[in-house]
Length: 315
Image (cartoon, rainbow, N blue to C red):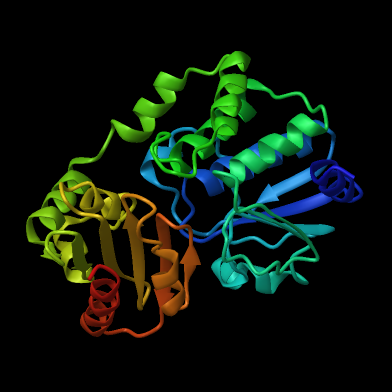
């Protein structure tokens, strides 16, 4: 049976769901979650998105108050994890439920932790997988569903710049445009309304980053003290800003978050698979975009270890 039809038949055998995107959710996690919630509700199923984290500023303007629930427990029949490369990225929310019933994701490091798994690393985004479920099951795409699928696709492909883009990605974008979404408005809201505090923090990181390996590596350790100084705790896309410097092939941003050290790795092309580095630090992800959460609380010590591993790769 068609894999998209098979997973959908299993999903709709239940009547109520909680959807769990990964912690520190990005455009793909949020976009695919809301799109799935909306299509489930369109066939008279109950669906909730459970997320405790603050929504990124560039995504929050698209949301309604009822889209996401925080700090609640739900009496539901099934749990759906979306865009979470491993179960640890669901954090303590999963403790409220009896495991994951459906695991839908596109991370190559995903170990199929759900009772039912649809993990397709060849797809650009989890949003693209949700789109394919919709299309293969002849589900009507509303304008709002299309908007969130486009957010998922555009953000996880870096506005169609990354190597995870395929002809299928552009077919999906074309289909969503036919529904009537305003892609220019969506992209401007996401990428062209940056708070001044975020812009100042990015400037500080770029000005003070360490450039190594003959200019091919850019790294920075963003301490809580620096975040406090700039009154900005939004680290989204800062690793990309470092990667985008001329001559840089790989960037690494380490930052303190909730008594842990987070690592974001980016590469400019397929010559360096940064997921192999992320795995060494207990994380994972994609060839050009990966990350890890490191329990060690000394960011300077982690910084030294990450630099050493990256410099080996870039010799």
